[in-house]
Image (cartoon, rainbow, N blue to C red; front, top):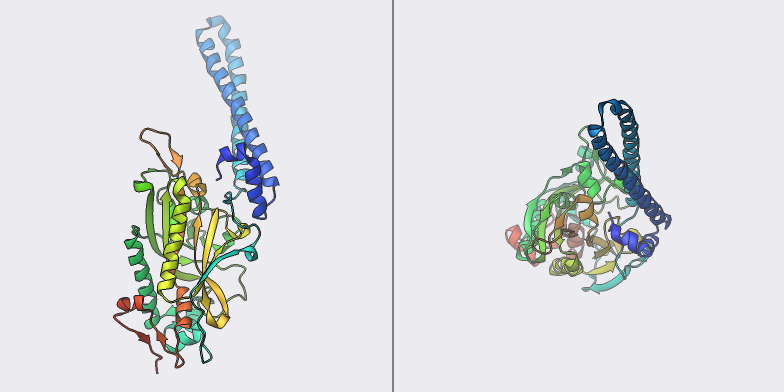
Length: 422
């Protein structure tokens, strides 16, 4: 939920944000009208209830002979109070529906438009070149005995896979390396649930227009997460938390699930766009005034990881229409994939300001004894299965072997080169 004070005091700012996202400005006008009706209905209900309470005292003190008439009036008043309460409840529900159509207000400088309107902030590293025809990650993975898509499909269907042998070791090495980097930077490690309740999924903003991407278990009314961000955001739901030195930082390791609805025919080869993968997600709760600095910090950690693995990458400022409902700004880091002759997203980091915290009622107290305020939340991916694509393709050799990036070697028992199997 957006800041209601901002909606009431500066609706033009909210309207500009909605338009930048490609949404109708009518959503803001509808929310303002619903807010006005909600407050009018609530005032009418409270006035009638106060009148009812006062009249009850009059009835109690009235002479016996006057009470029958007064009791009849009291019943009539009670019916009016009940009707006013129902109207107030209905207005409240209509307001919630209207305000939920307004996505988080984007920060100044975020480019307007859709997916193609991103702005490139920087390109880092030397794009790899080869004096032989490079193999794609799936061909390499098969030669190394690292990826088995055929049996993944046999067991679970399209877009599933097995990582085996050095493939499994490579993913675990990558995840453990990322976890160590998170620990060095003050993050508390977490292994999170992968099933969450509807109110947690909705609170993080994932049950909007992209809800068809999420697996839902109808019999249990639970959702499989597509990122541990969801569980980590819900971790402090309905709490007033302490923010030591201004921030709480978690690193959540989980398996993630995405239906990839609407992606038929896209990235069907290999493990770029799959239904199940592992991910280490950074998640931060902080004071709102520190959120932009925390966002830059998360981005720097992602870039440090990519650079240390010898991957060429670029950082883009994602356009407003491609942010998702919760993010006020998002940076994607995209690594170069040689056989696609293109940058492909490996990780992203989002500043969600106070949007998720308002929906999940997560607050902090800036001063001892002071009024509580909503915290800001941020997230960023430090490693995920898709990174294997760029690692294999970037560090391949002509014979199909792959050089293991130096930082990963200690996590693979000192292995320096992945060799094709016979």
